[in-house]
Length: 272
Image 1 (cartoon, rainbow, N blue to C red):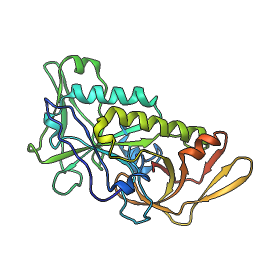
Image 2 (cartoon, rainbow, N blue to C red; image 1 turned 180 degrees about the horizontal axis):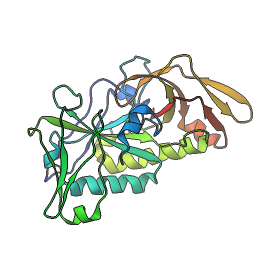
Image 3 (cartoon, rainbow, N blue to C red; image 1 turned 30 degrees about the vertical axis):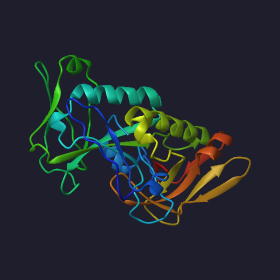
Image 4 (spheres, one colour; image 1 turned 60 degrees about the vertical axis):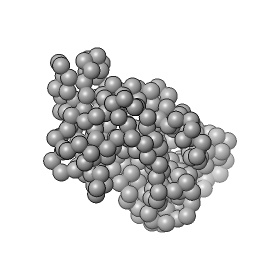
């Protein structure tokens, strides 16, 4: 769904290798995907998502699983994106949201006046781009068969592409079981995104954070007893806005699957 050094890998027409971009290794554990009902994610409304971190509690920690792809979407075959998204969706069983964001390679900010088209012999489709740089990539079988590719109105090498995975949870009340399934789905999705030899150097997703932009929030959990989890772990969302999170560890979610989570309005979910 972390701010420091990251791992990256170029993706070209001949090479479909995607490398995992992480903030520091220590920070990955508390990173994640913004919930579908979160403002940043809602603007994207797309078919993509993941990352995690936050043990040090600093405001600039990156809190979502981020995979750095190519620096020029014009050389990324649509075939690669189509197959990648399809594999992640199948592996995650719709428990993970995939977000694809394009930013300036220099400023890492959204690119002004950016246009992206899906072009082929019989295909010419302009893609939707949110103000924050998130793009909606359609899974179009006709375009896939047509050999369509992404074409932009920007100079080659001027942009970078980021793929983020975020937890996909029910909007109001949900169970620890939903958390547990989302974590397992993220782990499976990462296997599809990241080569095994890069996964050896990365911590696994071991929890989900229920997060708020405001401080002093709590998350109500109803199980054998009623408890209020303090949202006191600092993290950041995919746009690097500061969040305050209550972390639910994978082992706890797996052990107490029937526990109900009733978060206050305005929450986001990230992998941690």
